[in-house]
Length: 357
View 1: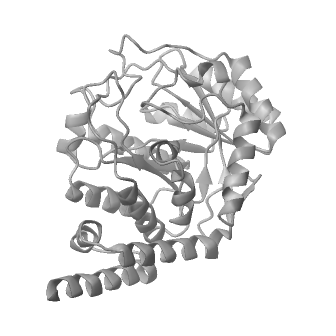
View 2: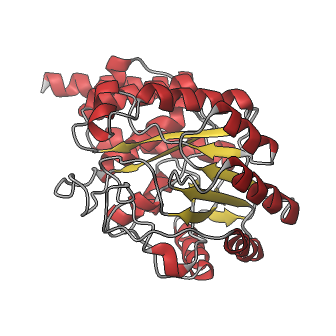
View 3: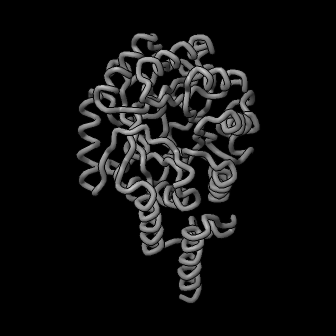
């Protein structure tokens, strides 16, 4: 009983420290994520949501996701798009198809387009710069976010110069040994992290992120992820539960724990109060109310899908992905209703990171 009381008091102190000083040491973070009760969970949630409300109000930013290629040169062990998966359906959108998705999204009120794809060699710098500059030319009031994986400094610079505003590159895990257990030998955590620092240096609003509950992950590894986010200070951070894919060696693994994801969202909101924090599709896949819960725990971004419906199921990073059959207009209407029910509203705004809020 005494030990439980001590943990309870200690957790309150840690949460208060996060809430006021926006930092915590590794041992404190480990204590918080491994030994908490419902009161801790709710107090942390309230602090995180209050912080988001103070900075952003009840506004939830929407990003229009365009999944433009399911072809990838990499062989990440957890991913359904890994190059060795012979069952994966491969496709590429043309420039005109991508622009059509943007046009549809613009008419629906989207002011950020997220171009996401596997590391597909077809999309060279010349090809991507042409697409980005055309989007910016046609839709000058919109932001372009890219999620194209690891590229050279020079490539990132060219894409930035062509008009790209943001770049998403999840680090997946900040633990070197863990990274090697999830990726083939030709991929390295050092290169992934260098890419993130390069993106920051060039001037992108940069997004990192990690899976929660991936195979071999320990609480100590999650603490490393949190401290890396604190150090990198990205403008965005995408986290979600690990969800297994039937054509990978992790097909029989359990998905990540929703409560732990929510707790980590709240911690990240307190570590980096101004951060743009999505309630991810993976969270909504594992829990029917996952995105709403994510918002209530401090998230302030959702990413409806603008990709052509005929290709949605083919961009299969993990199994049972939600919203693969709905038209974009249906998705945005559904999300708006869902957000309204929890007291939030979707806004048609670029939703840029603001460091001086």
